[in-house]
Length: 187
Image (tube, rainbow, N blue to C red):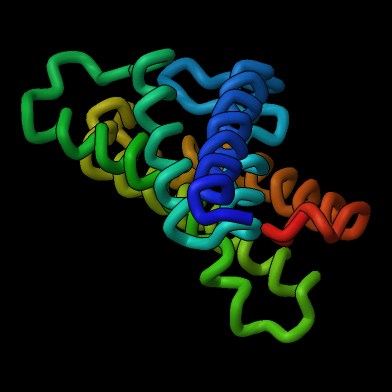
């Protein structure tokens, strides 16, 4: 295959994964009032891109998805100010979704590919949770109703990110067991 064909094929795959991720993100199992929801495996397409095409394409696809997620459902706390707004954009969107592209990095040290897939998937879910947690402490803490901001953020973000992360990791592992060739760029 020529280099331009391969690059075009990868870009088309990434675009399809962004579309699939966007559709899945809109199938909400549970939604919280100030943002955050348990979706139907919406992180799986971005993790799959990371395993198929590596960290560069994984980060790129996650980043594009973050911009699309902002366009489709941007939610900001009341009168946040410029600095908190920038922090929220970075933590709740750009970094949170881009980090999904790092799954292959966390999987690399494992000789057993199934274990690597599980660890890589779980690790990026934890990274996404940490982004949400930090945003909750630094930006959304004023909504805590007297609780310390870190407890509020841990409880609020954990209530949807923990189930979402567990579901995502299980889905990626089952997908790998059912179709391991999907995780290779040569297929």
